[in-house]
Length: 224
Image (cartoon, rainbow, N blue to C red; front, side):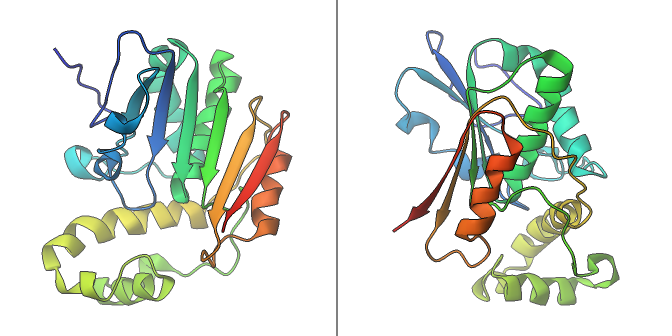
């Protein structure tokens, strides 16, 4: 019988797996975006898409007030699973920061570290200056703001049900980024920081700075 988890959905668990892979989604998204991935991984991996609060089957739960607290909750609630075998943490954009903070808590509180942290399409942990005041915006203004940032397309705005589902979580996640105050702790694992050639939000310089957050090694990679 397949196990049920609070923090993970669409899992692919293999009894003889050698490595667990945990994937944190981008802002506003749920674990379902990773649903197809598990079956594509080799048999040596078990796959755990992370289900954050305020989306899908956790829609009624509030997102923590700070990025560090989000990582702390993920680490404490799942410490036994993280320690059960070697593991990789993958995060996309916002999810990369959540994955990093999870790694920090696991290292500090449980002497446990991933064998690799992958921070895809994400700048290094830093304080965001000049961030928009999302709390002062009504839904129409929020929609236009996120369209302008490229987080949602104009076509998506025609689907009211989608906006009702997606905008609150997206606002909450972006709020965590705007209020983020990283401590700059170095994790004990290597960091791999891939980003796309068409990604205007991440540059070679911002990807390269992930090296300051590991005591092992980091490697930025630009998709050609």
